[in-house]
Structures are given as structure tokens and as C-alpha cells.
Length: 322
Image (cartoon, rainbow, N blue to C red; front, side, top):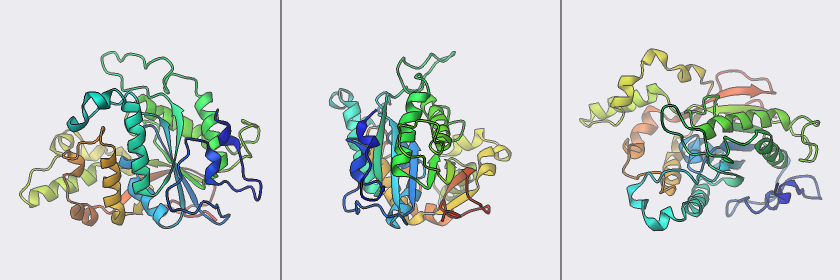
């Protein structure tokens, strides 16, 4: 455990940016002093680049509006494949962990968010039939209690009003994404319980917990149809053919839509900052931003837990938070 995570400011109990230890990153130009009246959002992700492909425009919007937004990355992404041919070079492969840290720092700067590494080892994506076990000592292989205590410590230090993470399927069944869900939900509960981890800071009750739901069939279909109307071949045909529109169960789970089209350029720039993971010529960037802003100007979430009264559907993650 990083002792820096446990330190608190003496003057008023508020948490300043120096208190998160050496892995904590505060965006340049943002005031360091925490105010009691500020709203705080914590977005918990499994790997560097997840924060830029899942809810990134929402976090950029809230940061731009003056709220504090902390992205927590649970693993270093050390076992991620290099997916951009231009970056698949010996000098990158030899130091991929350090490169991914640099990419994450740049993405956080673009989004305007604060950032912390939780410090666990990427499990990789098992392949084969049957699937092999994840590597010993990796995030998905170790007992839950260690990551849980570390995240609870960070929750109690940052004191978010809202947390976001993945659903029980991890968004997709990567073992680190599923474990991210398990740790995040457990931390939401445990951080408020004075009997759990008494040495990890004063209890803090997070008001609301959300799951990201960005991979929706209807959005893909709208964009694919727009390509056809413009005489172009869209990139989503094979996915749509295999995806029954009557069984988009994720769409039925959406409770909250955040207007964030003005921040799509930041989202894309942050994603491109993860150059080892994202091919700038790939399908992520095929649809023009004008189409995306016009056809689907929101990002979607599911309200999974709430300690405050809510009225669904919502248009603000902080709705109901006093």
C-alpha cells in the first residue's frame, strides 16, 4: 500500500492533489484546493485507453464545467497487444509498460482529468478453447481483498459523489474488466462501512454508481445507414449482421444519457494518444464527427446503485446529489 494514499490535509479534512502518492496526476492549470461544494466524479477503468473509449466525452464535459474528475486505472496494460502497425517496433515492444504510462498521461491531459494508477498487473486476454488460466499474480488472479482495500483507500481520499465502472460482464468479457466491475461495486459498498478497512481513511458514502453502456446496436445502425446515404461503405456491417436488433439488452438497461457532443473531439484525441492501442486509420475514426454529433450526441450509462432519490431517465450523473 502506498502510504501517500493515506495522507490527509490537516487544515480542513479536504483532500488535495498531493495526497494520492507518486502515481497521482493532477491536470496542469487546475486549482489544487478542494472545495466542500465541488462535485467529484471517479471513473474506474481496467487498462490505459479504456478511459478514452468509454465515457470519455462525459468526463471531459464535467471536467470542463469545473467539477473534479479522477480516472483510476487498475492495471498498467502491460500485456496488451500493440494494435497500431506503426507502433509495432522493437523499441516500443521492449518498453511497452513505460510507453503506455506516457500515453495515459497524455490522454488525461487532453481530457482535463486527474489520474491515478492502482498498480496491478494486466492479466492479458486469454485465447483458446478451453481458455487458459490468467497469469499468476495478475489482476484477475489475485484475491479481491487487495485491490478492494486499495480502491477503498482512494475513494475515501478523493470522496467522489459519483463512480462509474463496467457492468457484470465487464462491457466485454475480458477478465480484468470483470474484475474491475467486482472491485468497483465492492468498493462502493465498503467505502461507506466504518467496519471495513478502518486504516484506509474515514468512511465515505458515494451517492451513485453507474455502468458505462457505449456499445449500442442502434448507434451503430444509425451511423451505418448514414454511410449508405452518402454512398460510402460503413465499417459496422459484419457486427450488425450478427446482432439481432430485438436482442440489444444493453439498450434496455440505459437509464442516463449525457449530452457531450461538444467533447467528441477531445474524446478522439485522447483515444489517439494511446498510439500503441489505436490505429488512427481504424474504424473508431471512420464516421465524421458531424454525423456523430447530429445522430447520437450522447453517452449512455446505467444507474446501478443510488443512495439519493432519483427520477429516471436522467440527463446528469450528478442528478439528485446535494
